Length: 306
Image (cartoon, rainbow, N blue to C red; front, side, top):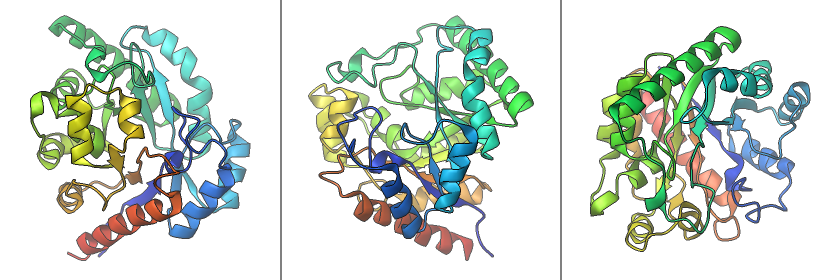
């Protein structure tokens, strides 16, 4: 008996959308070709992919890989549902055309994740119960629209530098939203987001708490010593990336056997996506992408044989 999950990758291993200087010269075809050769079944989107739905489908078909999903920059922490519905159509129609079942919703209202000089302590926060309830209501309505109009589930990406960053933020988000809002569980951001005050978060315990809401998974490992320095020295998110806070599964301190066991036992059947922001000049993309893939594939095979 096998475990019905698929292993994909984000092109950020080859070229970084937030820091175009990292791998900016690497053609999309290099990432697609190497990823397919390694054994990845699909790719999340980046800024080098064709924007037109049919052209995107053709490019992916050329390398026999699926469209996993694509990041969508949302503004519901400050904006209206109507505005978001209008803004999202082009992106959601592209995902729908390419068979995606989830969209990576990243809240960027007030976010500092792309500001290299701004330390993470200055990230935005939702500070009142009423504001959380209102935000949750807007997300619920938007998620309901995505399901009804496009057959796509909103996968909320908790992220360093954004309004939902810490495990406590995720707990609150899950409390004020319903089944129209799924959780994108990111192992690396969970660990990093839990390091406030010098504490360490149990990534597996946090996953277990919300596993029934998980609709998408980013498998990102961490170099714990770098994360500790990032917090102690008050780095920005991008400086943390540049200094190697993140890496692929199998190269850091997160117990992916434990993480995947929780997902397996809960009946998760979505994508497992390797997404590790690193400098490709320091972390050769093919080498690290293969390590991430092989680490996950071995664990998936092991769990599927249980």
